[in-house]
Length: 312
Image (cartoon, rainbow, N blue to C red; front, side, top):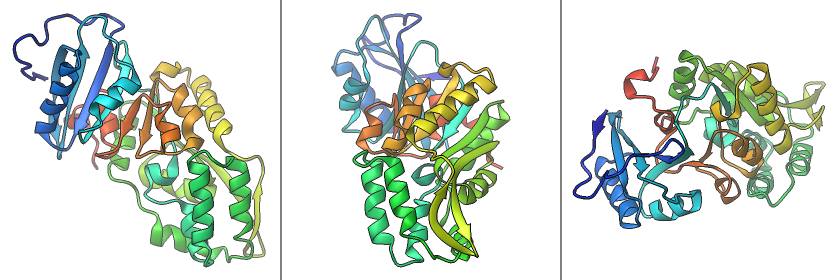
């Protein structure tokens, strides 16, 4: 690693064991310097360590000196003027041993249910309900039942058509999953969407396992029902806990990432909880945010270097 010069008076103290570590990632190298200037003008004098650039991404670790107060809301406000993604963690930063990721609008660029609704001519109505649920204004199970009921009678062939025509991985998704897997992490896709899509997206991105809801299908058509218990907000958090026990992984060594209120409990439970282009309800509980770059930023947050990335 290279040390980014901080000028006179910068880097004057040593970080303590439980001092916060602030990781910054941006698409422009000059932005890092401006962001650090902003932090230090607010009294967060410290030391910055520059990470090697990787395919248009620039990152650094910023370790404030002494017993500074650097809570999530304070950091968010200070960095708001800059196109910088960040993660704030207490104590030593470490690579996660378990990745738990949402699917829709996180690993992939669309909401599968909204896109599926387009084949029935009901996308606008269903997308409006989806947005209410994502914002946390409508209980997820209630919203899911209401949306699926509107698809009753749709030919099941629309599922495959939707996947092939509409579903695309978000930039950096394969690199994130393959890199973490190559370095020993278990990668799990945990979605409030449907197993038809989670199975295919998991294979496409390289996840070891997947969980989702099961669509009711009879006679080649959707029944308008969801079979079995709903995998919603509480179930996502429970899935994280089950995987933690299964692999004997402490929550501090778990990374969880999502975009909506439905992901809030699992993101809050993880040592590194990331809000990805997220709704305010999720940003309020996450200790990391990605708003400007792509999913590779989550690797920088864990201390990976570009040469560690698995891009094949």
